[in-house]
Image 1: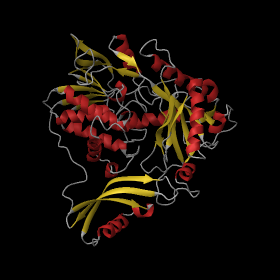
Image 2: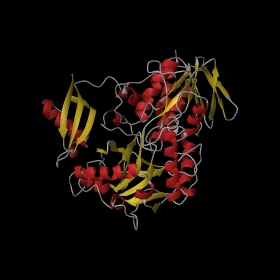
Image 3: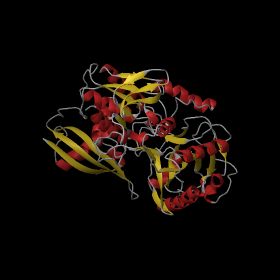
Image 4: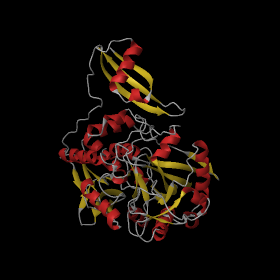
Length: 511
């Protein structure tokens, strides 16, 4: 017999499999010998009151064992002789497009400008140690995309466009912990995600697909308004319909499309700062306990949304127990992002706190918002000492328009320099950030503190350009054979939504 139960457990109960089983036996009136397995389907934390609970949905197997694994496996066949489809970009959109193409009998040819996920790590380390950015191998470019070394969060609200569960199952099949299937905010961790990405690549190769690293697309091959392939910087040519999944930071691709009069448009983004608190402070605030999280609760996280002068101000990519990292993709720019290892064990919590940008920027061309984004990153570089040192300010000093005399310790390893963010960042951003901070503090008293550090600038929240496509066919509005995909095309916002978009593009490109 199989039954499903909704449980409300104390943290010390939820942390122990035997304790969960004991509660299940008590609720059902079954003996421990009869309950052969308990599988957690959903798990979330309710920290609204002083006493914190875990809400759990479990599947109980009484006098029978589970018939299958916790996730559904997909069989990938040999497609070495299948229809070739070119996939430009090996981020989540491109990788999941390639896997779906294999399911559909097509041969994916993945072309990635950056390095493989292992070698890419070395270049990222050099950014920290030597303050130099490799424009082809960094936090944004390379196998795995922008998410590979900036957290691996899998939470998404994009549930209408495709199956989130399917995407999580595929991650599990390639090595992710099955806990992502049950957690309310699933997270693989920056330390674990590279291995999963390597496994996906190996599956593509084993099935007869191709993966080409350090191979940058320079142009599309267009014949009578039909895209039939691509040219690359090293003189190679690849033929087939093209899934363009180049990520939100491939500015050279946007400039190429604009120069070729291929339809694109400016898209609103959100920009602001990366805000870092001591994790112990966030634990005390979110769990309503001056002692912090204790032994059984995870590092606390938060999610805030406010309105200021008609624009949203919100937290983005919150990283409990994480680190602030340098995410520039070219020289003379400073961009900050956040990441967490799987254990979320650092002493800091950070999140992007950003403001919606819409008509504050005059749209002279489809690249106008991208140009604004780039200029703000250049200003951060100048005010950071013309290195990867980040300009920073204590939170209350920022709110009071006051230069910080000193700065607290930070996880940002290239270092920080005291800078008046309130002065050189645009007022339509800083004034709204101030109001947002005040509103957040009303919800979580103690959040507004000079123990917190604001680092500039957080700009890569999403693509500043949308590559126009038909909603039904997923192909470009004027070019047959071109399928703009994922975050870089302006149709996704995170790992899972980009993966879903990649699958949808693959289904259309395979026809």
